Amino acid sequence: MQPPTEPTTLNASQVNTASQLLGRAFQDDPLMIYLTPNASRRARLLPSLFRVVLSYCLRYGVVYTTPDLAGVACCLPPGQTSLTIGRLALISMRHIPGRLGPAGLWRFLYASHYADKIHNQTAPGTHWYLWVLGTEPHEQGHGVGGAFLQSVIQQASIQHLPCYLETENPRNVGFYQHHGFRLISEVIVKNSNLHVYAMLWEPA
Image (cartoon, one colour):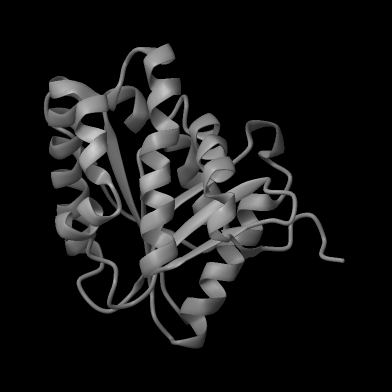
């Protein structure tokens, strides 16, 4: 029997449960607050948004979870790290703009422009991309997120490649630094209080 924090791979039948989990994990995330300031509306929207992310990574990457579904990590491997609108549309991204509303969609595209730019600048070569990592709020600090990071780092290390991530939550920066990621740059999204922190793990 696997330890409760031992990463395993998510299967398609778990997507709905995992999307609800990520919705709870990111309810108070600065990026999600920027996209949808209203808390109750955000709680309704986030599971749909993360269902797209999970489905995308199941098709083009890998999604880690734990036997008791205490957390989720969505990763894209080398060659798949640039998100495409065409692929997102295939995964049902077409349903999200209407739920975001015009203002939310504009903020989503605006923040995505900053994230894409900093991603390309920080990791222009072949790399792994840790797109999303979230745990149940009551599981935070219990080693789940660290176990996911070690799985991703192990994959990158085997191929002797860097691993990139960005976070908009300043509280996460120290956590990732503890696991060997370096803060490469910090960008403030214009006309907002949203910060994008670009971080990179590199093999020795």
